[in-house]
Image 1 (cartoon, rainbow, N blue to C red):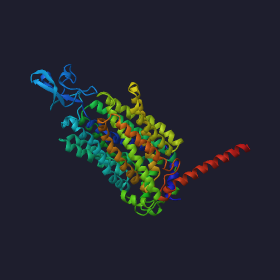
Image 2: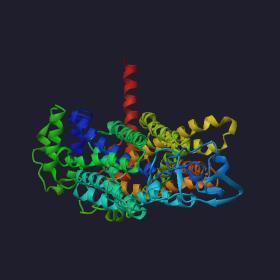
Image 3: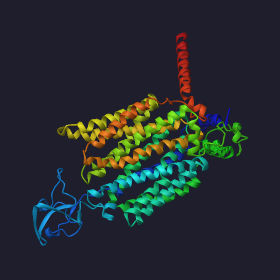
Length: 554
């Protein structure tokens, strides 16, 4: 029996859900919450603040003047949605008298804001519709930074360890987040916005792998539920902070300053045992296992570990070729396996689809209601993720990963696609339908993370999960641009999300089922997951047949 099999057996002896796992998941949960706050903060820091022309002749004194005074319709044209034009006013007949020529419109260069909210739009004078693309670009550049940084993060994680990569990502994200508060121009801000996720954009992925590798197959879904609950709470916390602060600099300080404390993880967060074993560091792995057994008060059979020492790569039951240390060598190995190459392509498409719909629904939620409602809408679309995780957990356990992924994609696609066709006299149904779409796509996101981590071998797992996440960033890069589609039709973004989700649901059916299987260590094991699943099912049928035969004899 190889050391990897030894460890799989040890996990049951250590305890699947003891004090060690609780400690590990608590530490990881704080990192996940920061990841949520950091990845979606641009929704509020680069938000569009409703504004109108400042009319000094009618009594406006500053940007804080009343937004909708009684005389406003005489001075400013209104849009079809009942809101005043942001940068147009009727031609003034007298600089000191509130009189206007309503047949002639002119542009203004000073504004009154609707409420106390202040974003980079107000800071850098990005007013008027022609500048909205600059605000949408902030989210796209944020996700571009993630795309650029994922290979770097994958390399650090696989070469130097999950813990090292996580600490670097957390502290770097916090530092760049604080540096953004010093931005004196739009260009300076967006450069920092892109650099922040370049160094800290893979926090969720690293945390997920770090937590997943220390639980038994039956407890993986439970462990993942803890992680995704933390992410949902982090999103809701972001909405609450933005609601309370209403100022982009205060938001950045409140969300990023605490991240500097993550440097303490160097001393308090244990390294992944599976990673240590994959590097031949059996002595270090032994220390972590013994520490876990001590915390869980478990009686561990140390006989199988008595000669574990560092530098024993020859004892590791993996492809001990020295490859698999980074994204590019991982991809080279995958190209030699047609099964894994097809699987990588299918997973990548599912990732791009789920990120487009998930982030698209989150970003567009702030436009569902008025200025005050946008915070409640964002928090609602965040909290609706929590029950989604509970139901998805049950579905993954009972229906399996593949069916769950397909059903959640299809359910979200139907909800999004149907939403635009709800009659105006039944408009109250649109918000519940919208929330159900987010509910379902959250389940798909949850499932695709578990699914992807379970179908690739240990030494390539983090790099290939990073590859899928990297391709998925295509969807999250496009998501911030989808609100601009409302200029053509307010329902066009939802129709797009619906079509993409339905196609991804069909693609998910071509992936292998992994329910109940052990994490594959080698490429060969990963290729034969379907055989392992069939063998597992056959064993269950044999056990059931034996039980029935025994019952008949009795």
